[in-house]
Length: 58
Image (spheres, rainbow, N blue to C red):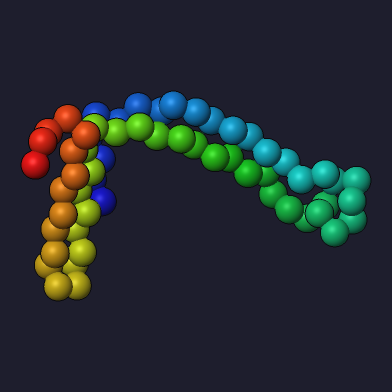
């Protein structure tokens, strides 16, 4: 996968409630939101490539 014109639009940090025994072993979690102008998927198995762009008309 190839992204072009990428911008980070959001970052969320999370942590389980360590006071609950069942959740005390869980790690911190990070979620990152991205916005992009163009994406290209390349599937090696079958050599299939697909590109989609928000700025270009088909």
